[in-house]
Length: 455
Image (tube, rainbow, N blue to C red; front, side, top):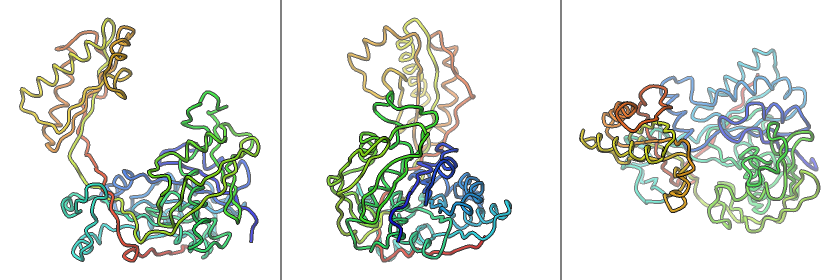
């Protein structure tokens, strides 16, 4: 058994820094490269792509990256794990195989994990008394069934471990938890049992630290001015050990910073009750985490405790919930904020006169109150403004009303307050609103499958 492995984060979201996975693979030693592509909204976007063309529905830039890295994978022996398969992991894996063969690389194995996609099973599940209730409202999924565009259960580390056991060099999954991508290499390498809750919690915490890419190595950091060379920021690496301890670091010579504070900020990102960080693999108690700097760009993480896994998997579903449209105008000195507010009032009066109703009408002054409520400080700052951007957004279930909004905002240029500019791109067009539906499903009703393709 290895005494340590290095797990490198190469992607924090779909659209992250393109060179990051290449740098992680080539600027120093690694054993695993993990890449997280899926946010909740991403699944619905990919589902719509697949509905338009059955060949798609996955993160196609991942295929490009892995194809380019194929010679490196073969030469250096590291493995790549990602949930970039989205709602069509089989097509993603097949595209990788074709891409590698096109580069003249053979002998590698690409594993594909399926079983998370519940779309074709929804009606049967509902008929069998599985309500898939909204976790916050308690409403049954049947109330929006006709508008559901995607539904996926969050799988854990187990199917990835099985794929690695079968000798996979690249593992492609659909909706696998962000943390499972990192936990799986530890379970596989160190032979951890799936009821060793403290070690599973440790691997889960490591995954949470890596899942957002450079956010734990200096990106999006409160004290960002203290972080060197963000232009060449190095992505984080978890140097993991069999006892469940690990060190967060990065490749030497890269920008960014790994410190107790950068790691701590990431630990607090997107969590609820810190005592109960629930995943398919177990429950991690974040209040037991200890952080200790042991050198430059090295933070040791230890002492983590866990509890048994629940009997459920989380389901991430999405459904169509109307339309939205947004447009902007820029007003200049003098009194730009006063002009922008007046323009928003004029626009709303005209929409009302046409009898157009919206679920939401929002007018914001970007740079003044788009992120905060109007208060005394807002009024005091207005006098110092030379320009301000008016951003108006509408949302509703009437497509024609949302479309009409786009025809009404442009006329403000010549029929509203003066010194206006910045209107570009033509009339805004309605875009579909996709709403999130979180639910739970018994684990016994979801069966992951692993298939290995030979390159």
